[in-house]
Length: 197
Ligand code: ADP
Image (cartoon, rainbow, N blue to C red; front, top):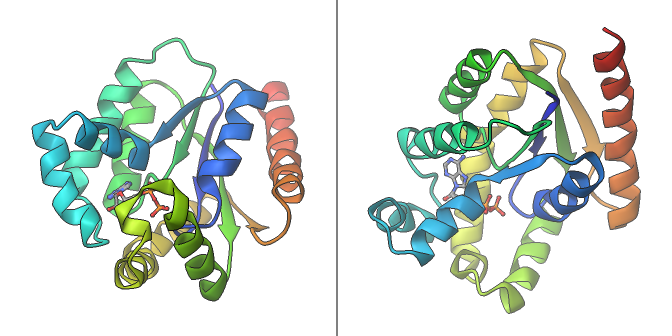
């Protein structure tokens, strides 16, 4: 298996790039944001609990998202690899993911981190809010709170993977194609190593 984490702050382009990457590399896309929004749409108990946190721009508790990812891994036994988008977002989630992947005798090949300035993020998210229908994209206070959560709890996750030499930073400002090409360059280099080793 070949597993990737696409990492970066809210609005850094993870969703857009994920769509292109899963098509090219035939990976299973696991976006905790999408999974949570689908739980909310179906009004499940998990969705109702998660919504309280998401509406305030706060992270959903670790045990909730870890449980969701664990189920998703079990229900997709035959895939060539996973692309994790928006997960892990805390050190506890990263440790849990490592353990879950170990059980499947696999691991994370690389964390691709998209770097985008804060001004650009806020601009993009407010703009997305005009059409996405996402309530957390409309209010600038909620957007700032999401970026704050990212700085405090999520950014350290990159240090966790850096210890294993697995983090690559990519400039997330530029055209969608330019960024996609940079991501593919890093994946291709590692996929080759993965195949020959
Ligand atoms: P974005 O990264 O653009 O903010 P996402 O769709 O990834 O959007 O996430 C939306 C919201 O869902 C987050 O603000 C957070 O409340 C919740 N969420 C998503 N993934 C996680 C996670 N791994 N851990 C905790 N909360 C999460």
